Amino acid sequence: MADFAAMFMRKLAPVAILLCAAGACSRGASRASSAERSSAAPATNPATPVARINGEVITAGDLDKQAKPQLIAIEAEHAEKVHGAKSQALDGMIDKRLLDAKAKSEGTTPEKLIEREVSSKVPTLSDAELKTNYDQMKAQGQPLPPFDQIKSRLAEYLKATKTDELRKAYIGKLRSDAKVQVMLPPLLPPKVEVAAEGPAKGETVAPITIVEFSDFQCPFCCRAEPTVKRVLDEYKGKVRLVYRDYPLPFHPLAQKASEAALCAGDQGKYWQMHERLFANQSALAVPQLKDHAKGLGLDASKFDKCLDSGEKAKVVAASKKAGDDAGVNGTPAFFINGRLISGAREFTSFKEIIDYELSSGS
Image (spheres, rainbow, N blue to C red):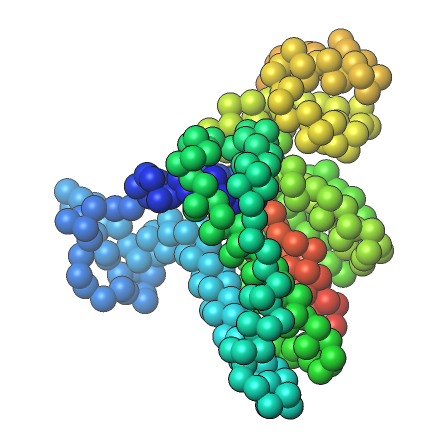
């Protein structure tokens, strides 16, 4: 139900550029004008000129250095898209073969099988039931037009959602009965060098290091916290987490929140403040940060001096630059032994890479 408002609004309004979507808060990207780009083939020699401005040369090496962060992000995104396309295609092949085999064994067709096991079991909702679903969405804060205007589309949406749910359950049972094993290698983004500097959890000698770039005001970063905790719990002794600040420009309270956590760290309570800030994302203004410090039993005078002086700003800036250099363009971003995954991912996304790294001894 939570996706209906977004689906409906897409039908009513032109496509917009979203700063927070697909499980991550993004800082966006800029593009150069096509009139400023040359059609020449890219140079491979770092000393080769690629542009001249009043006689001053920009070399291929200069360009590579400047473009490195964007290229890292593009390479990781490409690897993810390729893996996603293969995974989706493989799932489709497995599902088709299972349905074909089941239908053949029962002397029917896959279409009739789906009609019997899925479509026929989807209930038709009454107007009262549709209104109940509509009211629940409104209560969750979703901006919806009047009920009478969207009743038919709401019915279609709920029917499609239930159909998909029942189909997945049926296919899941077929997979379980057939003992399907998927041996497609996990998504393995290219490795990137990232300095593991900052507040950390886990053994320093752990074979897996996760460097997380995050923003205390980012809702997706907050959503990722339980998954990160699960990773640390299930791979205790094998995973070390290093947290690095990456306050986004459109989150005006994130910078001082990052500084506040570091100031708390000076008094030995970084992670307590870290958890408190994510648990209170609507209370990150400076006075509230000071209240949080008092609530943690910190020395208020020392904390306030640290926060008001801005002495931790340079630490946050260094962390953000490290993220930029590594190709971070949104939060949260995780480098698992240097392999970048972006957004508030499910546990399995971490597990696949961690298990691969542990088995390969990388």
